[in-house]
Image (cartoon, rainbow, N blue to C red; front, side):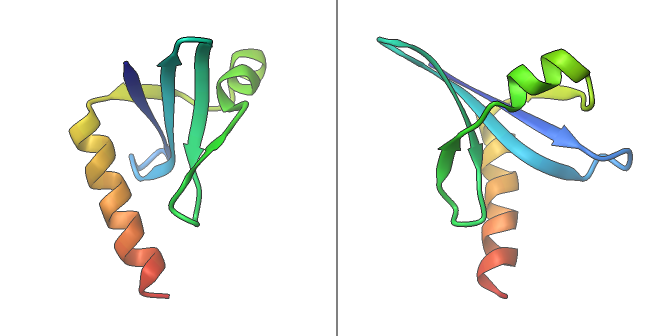
Length: 77
């Protein structure tokens, strides 16, 4: 099972897209990077220590929409 999360700025603009993937060997936390691939991240652990951001769980459809907007913007550069 995969769960998706977003970190947004005060104006509710997405800053970071995260996912937590349940695999047979345990949970894997990943962030979507500018190369449009998912990479391991420690954002959940760091945030648990410092509380810098509010990490909000979102439906897969919203995560897809955010990724699609970023993909269009990043590929246009």
